[in-house]
Structure formats: C-alpha cells, structure tokens
Length: 261
Length: 329
Image 1 (cartoon, rainbow over the protein chains, first blue to last red):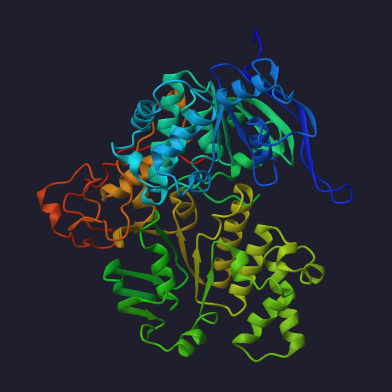
Image 2 (image 1 turned 45 degrees about the vertical axis):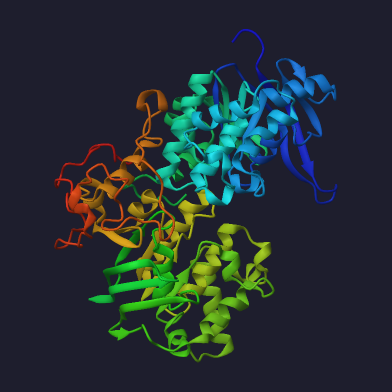
C-alpha cells in the first residue's frame, strides 16, 4: 500500500516486573493501521492485547519501539503532537461501568473529552447529535450510568469516543461483556459508524467469530508476539500457525461438537 | 428414569417475580442445557435447586430429586445431598476454592465429606481424580495453592471436587465463561467425557447457545423468569417455535458465520432485557417480539408434548428462519 499508515507501532516491547521475575507482555510487536481499514487483533489472556491497546492510545509507554500517528511519534513528548493524537485516536473499553464516571450524568461524560481537548463549538448541541447517532433516546443525557443497561452504557462510551471526531477508533473487547442479543446491536452500530464516518478501526478481542464479522485483516497475538497476520478470510480458511488453528477450532459453533485440543 | 423434577417453581424477592413457575425434568445420565441472557433467572434457578438461593428470596413449588422433595429441607439436610448426590461447578473457580489450602487437600476434604474412608484411601482417590481431570503430575500439582494454578487448572480442580462423591447430577453454571476460548474447549470436552464415564446427569447453564448446543442433548430456553421453550437440541436449532428462541439463534448464527461484507448487518433483537420488575404483563417477550398480537397480554402456557413452548403465535414447525446456516465446521 502506498503512503504511510494512519497509526503504527514499530517493534514495541513492554516488560513488567524486575529482572528476576520479568514478564514480557509484548515483544517487538509491529502493527500498521491503514486509513479506512478495519484491523482485528485476536489474543487470549496473557497475549499482551490489553497492553497493546493501552500503548496504542498512549495510556502506557513501551520500553522499546515507536508509536506513530500520521507519521509523527506520539512518544516524543511534543504537546502539539500529543493533542492531535488524543483527538485523532479514541478507545472503547470492555466495561463501560469502569470507564464512565458514576457521578457524572451521561451528557457530562460525553462532553468531557470536548472540554479536555478544548474542541471549539457548541458542546451541548454536539452531545445531542452524538447521543442520537449512537441510538440513545432523547433525555438520556440527564441520566447516570447506573440507570442504563449494559448495552446503553456501551453506546455512551462510543458517543464519548466519537466526540472529538477521531480518525481511528480502538475497541478493546468492546462487546465481550454484553448479552448475546445486545452484542449484535452494538456490533452493527460500530460497523455503521465506521462506514458512515470513514473511521479506521482496530478491533481487539479474544473472539475469532466477532473479529471475522467486523474486520478485513487480522493479527494473531500469542504470548506477546505476533504469530500470524493476514486477510481475515484467508486466516480462517487456512491458518498457518498451530496456535491460530487451535484458536479457530475452539470457537464453539451452533450444533457443533466440542473438540478437545 | 427421572432424576430431577422441577414443577411450578416460583421465586420472588421484594414482591417481584424472579422465576414465574418453571417446570422441567432431567433424566438420569442426561445432558440438559439451560440457556438465558442476564435477567432470565437462570442463575437463581440453579441456586434454588441447590438450596442456595439468596436471603430474602421466597421459594414456592416443588423440586424433587431422586424422588425426594428438596424444598423445605433444613440447611443440614440439604448439605447432606449437596456435594454427595448433586455437585456444582461455578463460573469463577477462585470463589469455589479455599485460597489458603493446597488443592489436593481440598479434594481430599470433598472425598471425606460424605464418606468414611481412611486417609490413605482418600489420598489415593484424590490423586486418581487429579489425573482424571487432566493434571499430568498429580503428586506434585496437588501441593499447589489455587493462586499458583491457571484459570483452566483451577476449574479442573473444582470439577475434581464435584466428582469426588460420584454425584448423580452435576450442575454447572457458566463453567467456562471466565476462561479463554482454547481452555473453554478443553474444559467442556473434559466435562462431557466425565459425565459420560460417571453416568451423571449434567445441567449446563449458559448464555452461549453455541456452547450449550455443542454439549447438551436437550435445551431449555429461559427469558424473564419463564421457560419459553424446551426441546431436543436438534429441534431447537432446526425448528424453534418460540420467537425469542428463533431470534437468539439468528443473532448467534449471524456472528462469524460469514465475513461482514458477505453477511451485511447482523440480525438483532430490538430493545434490551428489562430489569427485574420491568417485564410486561402477559407474555414476558412482549414489546420485543415481531409476532406480538392483542392476545399476548395473557400469559401463554407452556404447551406441547416433548417439544414445549410458551407462545400464542408460535413459528410453524420446520419454518426455521435461517435454515442451513448451522453447519458446523
């Protein structure tokens, strides 16, 4: 592909703990998100996928390696680069209860990034538009998180992520805590918004089935390393790495059989 | 032979119905799945069967197990059955295990809780159980504490404890929901193999229709504290009669069946599961159901012989809305 990636990590590594009991959460992980792309990152616990998510939105710094947004390092410490990065890359987490402040009304939560990033314009009106865009009923802005269902809370988190008009959206296990009937609604919403707003998406999940539905390309993370990468259909049809093959075989299928692996 | 017979099971808390009269049976050696989303009452049903319903929950109806009425038993009488004839496996193994005790000792305690055996005999049985649930070196691994094991290994210990007394019924409530996908497959395969070997019945409670349909011979579908459909797994997958079951199937089958470009939008169920006390009068699925009519203001009874469903306007048998998409890999 021509040009430069919208968002990329170059050989990022992250180690936790001291030398004797060091845990290598990520080892030289390189990832490129192209403009308009929907990239999946699949991994189980211990794969380093949460660390990668946090590094991608600069909530955490890698020990080694580089993170670039629109070609500029986000680790350089230049304030201007960081502000454009914070506006440009937003994240949705698994548990909106954990990421929404329980004391703030929905409207305040959604307006918060607008205020923090000093986005100009009528914030009140923007909040209304955002809540409507994610399918929340009018009047929702006055409610508190505990008055909403899990699916509605995740819609609020999506509205807040979209507030600063990002170009890239990171979804970290964004539908894993939702009921089956609600999960499909939120997946449709994410897909619609990505299409309509021309967003680039990194969808991080343990669930191969969901990744297959949402993404076009996937990167398989195992114990902090990328073990396989490619178009999602190709990886599903003909996985090359034994771990990828095991991961795909393990996805329970309606009326299937449990395979002991 | 009927092992467990639940009839007219009603549970209320603060005047709100959690279970609205649930009827089902489990035969000896049978694998039955109880499926429901959050708020369906499936976990309260499981806890009530075990006599572990939370304080302030009023229980009515009948739970007969091996011909004996369980409701109204004293705590002491109940605990003699629990663990001996009926065992349970919960979602989070860490809460079921004592964090301060070596896992081998916890299995030994379970072996000795209901039977008089010598300490060498109970130790021998513990090592045998650990080997059966897949620990390659039981001798060494039995000395570990729960926190020194992985989530999957902890769940294997819980299963070993459940098996310690040859239970007639194993009740597993979301046993693999907290586990990784690859570990989930291993634990489900283990559970399935062990109940077959032991001849125990399994009541598997889950929100995941794919998991339940892969393990169980029969499926019970719960929504809003009501059993809305009960049938063999095959009938549920191929010819669901209740609109909720059909919708659940469609949304479960939609994800990952094909890539998004080919599949387009996922089928969804409009709205969300109401909170306790927020369910409509009459049919509990009213308001989210595409087939709703005036009559649905009356509670539909669970009808049918073998394949049972609670709906005034059921889908035609065989008119599966997405027939042909349940092809396993």
